[in-house]
Amino acid sequence: MSKTVIIASTDSGVVLGNRIRTQFPKSLLVSTRHHEQATHINSIASFLEGNLNTFDTLIFIGALGICVRSIAPYLQDKKEDPAVINMDDRGLFVQSVVSGHTGGANDITRKLAAAIGAQAVITTSSDLQEIWPLDTLAEKFGWKSAASQDMNSIISLFVNNQPTALLLDIKDKGTAHLEKTMPAFVDVFYELNQVNVSKYALLIAVTYRKYPVTIPALYFHPPVLNIGMGCSRDIETDLLEASVYQQLAQQELAIESIKAIGSIDVKHDETAFI
Image (cartoon, rainbow, N blue to C red):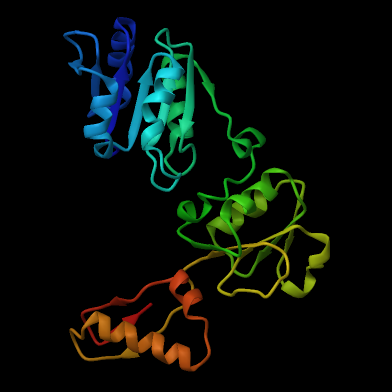
């Protein structure tokens, strides 16, 4: 379960914080104000310095400036930052501040706004356009992802509606969703030779392959490749894994592609599978 702290800067904020705790039953409510409904802290800065890593969701109630200045020293990148949400102490607006997609701040913002009848403030371009959040699709559908260049540049191409080719080598729940929700600037293909790469700025491929294309590419790898072999019962996992990758290398297969697709899972019988 998400570990949530609600940080209230005013007495009204404490009251609102207790109200929204129904959405986060095991959350901690803290405040610099002395209030019987909140745990007292001397300052937000000192509290975060000693406790930030304890929480994966921070909900500030008060001025946005307080929120921003408080978290600024601790921000690293969107893969590690906690979800940060800010709301005013009258409960009029709830704003997603940090880690909207990866940390889930956008979803929490919508949840809070619906719970108290507030206006959700979300500024993420893909959410506003209602197009795919490329940075969270893999996790949503159980895929692995790999990009031919910096992920932010890939996302920039997509949210700026650059012509995109969608290549589907497999069919699953995720690809059905992509086909159903394709933006107007995306064309779908089922064979690479159907794609005139010169017409597109980006390739998104749901595949077990990697393609030598000249445009930026984002690969989603579903776990569809399997390798079976006989082995001794309770064989050491490290030795088996090393042997598998060595054999694949000798067959001139792309080891990194295979690693992106799956991992070794040693069963306690006579067979091992990827």
